[in-house]
Amino acid sequence: MTASPTDSPEGPTRCGFVALVGAPNAGKSTLTNSLVGAKVSIVTHKAQTTRSRIRGIVMAGATQLILVDTPGIFKPRRRLDRAMVHAAWAGAGDADIIVLVADAARGRIEEDTQRIIDGLKANGQRAVLALNKVDGMKRERLLPIAQAYSEAFDFDSVFMISALTGNGCDDLTRYLAERMPQGPWHYPEDELSDVPMRLLAAEVTREQVFLKLHDELPYETTVETDIWTERDDGSVKIDQTIYVERESQRMIVLGKGGQKIREVGQLARAQLEEMMERRVHLFLFVKVREDWQEDRERLTTWGLEWDV
Image 1 (cartoon, rainbow, N blue to C red):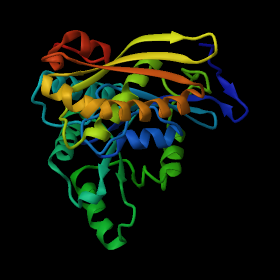
Image 2 (cartoon, one colour):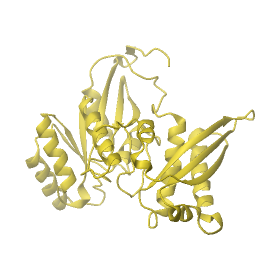
Image 3 (cartoon, one colour):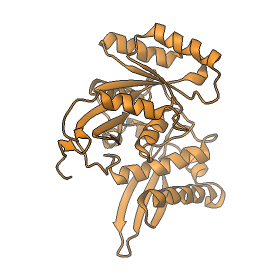
């Protein structure tokens, strides 16, 4: 990594951390990708798909915003759940600004979001509200929702956005950039994320597993990149293993005659080639690993703490 500048043509540089917190499926990962302008966090319609704190890097003039896309905050039931929620609150505690991303389309403050608001109050923390998914919502329906949130918490500012289309996101970026502390950039200006490519590649495949098998497969699946081989022709060979907890789940991932895993591989490979701008040879394997969600090594790989 090269030395970060302290001045730019736009003036003194600024740099700071922005934590995106919210209930599962509020749209935090979609917002992260929208603000960064590239895919750095996986997005599915299933809740709780972000498991670790993903950092996306946004350049706004002389300001570098480091977005921390945290796992959704919800009532934890398993060790993995507890580690994810702990990571989310830790990300919020380390941030210069906290943005609460809320799903406006739900029409109310749901239980998980209220739990976050209560946590912000208990910790004495300030926050900005990003009311997401306002696409097509009429003003008379949207205003009472915004009013309810304003009564529930004294937000520093409220933004109505669509992370999916980018509507309102420029205003949010401008607001955040103006409030970052002066200081050198933490990353080169052309860097988009601090997530290792091996981990991001595994996340891309995990996203496709969720998207292709959302009706059949619960959350008992994870993906690991086992081997990463750079080839002389500029392409890369990636060997990954999809882990499930039961043999019946392994058969679901494989599909009849291996059809499902081929579809997952084709979609993941296409996305990886687009991201990396080179040819990718992706080889997928499926194995059973019981209770992987209780595995210390797995949680540590994702940057999650075991003893929480």
